[in-house]
Length: 257
Image (cartoon, rainbow, N blue to C red):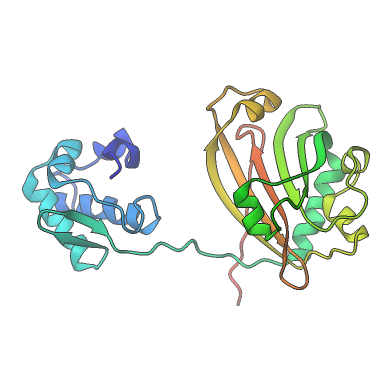
């Protein structure tokens, strides 16, 4: 069970007002519902107790009980005497479909307008979780690369770590610093046909903090990219971490007619 302070900001905990048009219980219900719907309080996780909620939001137990009853009525949580309340809603991140060609063009453009420094490029036995995802046999090596990307003023803004299968040539420090990775993959007969990306936030590790001129534990924008070939085999995993003050991830979406 997460602490209330881990889920809600101080401002949110102090936002409930008896002078607002909506009743206090409904204000609390809305806050809790939003955290369940966005996955902040995950499926199967135990909800804070009514007592903890009352103390955290500075309201009565009657208010918290009614808010929790509303969540149960919406089938977002289940309540069991003696066991507490647990989330039953399954959060699924909404997938956004976008043309791969445009994305690859943007990656190539970034490669041409910025600078790359390769820290490591070698064949290694991958970590167990990476090996399982790439479906490599025990002891089989994959190409492991660590890179830092700098802007035109030579200021570092991105740190990359990748694991790649099937490359027969071109993954040298020199080529990786001058060409886009998907172009080098194409030289080995690997055509990227499908990419999945997962965007989140994390804390900078010692290695990332050192290269991006940050402090250990500072927040970083994190992107995990899985690239698949034409046979839907996962061939490349890249973990990207960006300095949040030097990089912005912008999406421009339009409603189709």
